[in-house]
Length: 318
Image 1 (cartoon, rainbow, N blue to C red):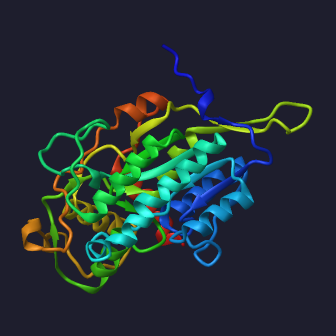
Image 2 (tube, rainbow, N blue to C red):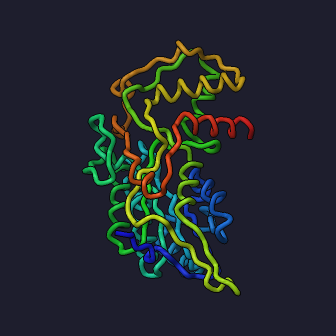
Image 3 (cartoon, rainbow, N blue to C red):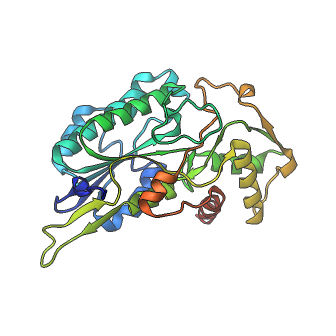
């Protein structure tokens, strides 16, 4: 049966795209990828306080976006354990609010979620319909956001991703590069398994799901539409590794790029999660099956190693 995409088409003109969390790693890359498709609104915290529901309502009413890309989130996983209300506002209530607006206006919404919604046990990759079971406040609030979007009646895409990093911002890759220059040895967790996902790939694949079309003689009917049936999709590179394996590859590629490092390959030790206690429990299994997204878009996602090479090069050249 051919999917009906008409419900994910909007005819607002001019075409305005709202990106929440626009200054974050994913939001920044979304701005770069979606710039050719319309006028980008990516308000700073000063321009729009996303923790203020009335301010969000007023902003939406004023700007009337034709597409919403919700890259805003409370991502301080450990801090969320002691700030559950703040995490709930950004991770659950904000997506619910944006989805309600999208449903009322008949516009598409893209929401970004996390591997932390799954229970994190076993070794089999999670499917999009696998049972959820968050281990932390962060994971629970992300799941509540997903469920609110699903129930809203909006035309939505939810991309669940893992281990996000980028050439800019604060992230594991940049921390390892700094520590690799400063220290001769490191111990890094080796029993959490997943796929490091660059923000650029998240934005590129999101953009692939959308096109704009206009019909001569005027652009009055300019619209944006998606090739994907609404639903949840896993978005990550192919392959899997541990944080220890990720760090080792970062150091290997940095050396290949001529970067001076104090650390040596054999001085990077692996330790179990139990030896590195944190306020929030981490999932040991963050593997995610990618077939649904690949089949829907007709693509083959790249390997995490090839994506690291691109991201590392961009960072080193910036």
